Image 1 (cartoon, rainbow, N blue to C red):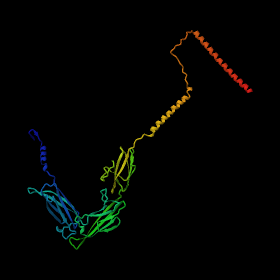
Image 2: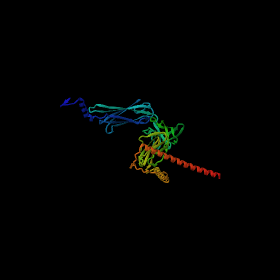
Image 3: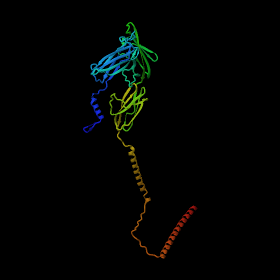
Image 4: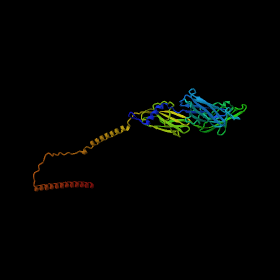
Length: 448
């Protein structure tokens, strides 16, 4: 399509139309049906319906019960006045009559259905169906409920309700599903308690106190019974019972929690601590370091917890700066939690030069001085031995030698040689005379 030089596709036109009507489009109306089933024969059950995302002023709901020979139904208008909600309560006889009718309703124990159909009328008086919800309910002949352990003041860390602490008294409590207080109509209501091996006792209340001091799993059973008047024959007594059981898991809470190690030390040394405790494993923990004196709020949690089966955890840390630090430790098992703050003081120490830096140079200096003094004294003592004769050579003056012929030089050489030979002979003669005199003297001395 082309308009005034502007081309528009059919897809664009449809999108614009959809966007124009989008504010008038409402989400689909949703139907929710709940009940307080199961229903005990002789008691009641209530079904509740609520509409969500309504876009009409009023609706019609049609309830229908289908079960055996029963066909009960109810029609109700839903509007703003009742908050678009509807309740339908059914009751049942506690024993089967001769003929089952809507006025004498009875169902054999089992599972049945109730349907709720919702519709509204348009401006043209057409009935438009919104939807149909189907819900199931159980009809029972014995009491329904649970048997649960309770420990006042003990916060169970895990979600399992059967965990208990060995350090606290345990109360076994029976919780009946009795929304219409049917049990109060009975007489001689008795609670019989058993463990895995024997009968414990009878009580008139739905609770029993037990001291479980050992770690392990313990079985308990309770049977409730009472006498009730028949809804068909007031002179007839009916017996209603209910039996409930549970396995109680006893755990030892964390105890003897210690943080061992040196907490005051100089800067530069490693923090080396050991976290130890007793209690049932496994253990979940985390250790966080906080600056200064951290104030515990009790709401601290582990961001990345670690799990161990041995509560002996080494912790090593190096502090980049001296000062006061807080070590926050969160330790928990299935039944207990401990939050601990340990103060660590890292103090600054003034740096001192080691003695070796002073002693070694001083010693070497003293040794050098001693050696110098000794050398000077030694030289002074023996200076005569090392006297040196200095010759004064005057190379500046040139001695003039007379000119001689070869014959003259030869004559001078022979004369010098002859003179040297005579001198050696003279010296030898003197030495022999001296030796001869010494020998004669020795000889004469011997004769004497």
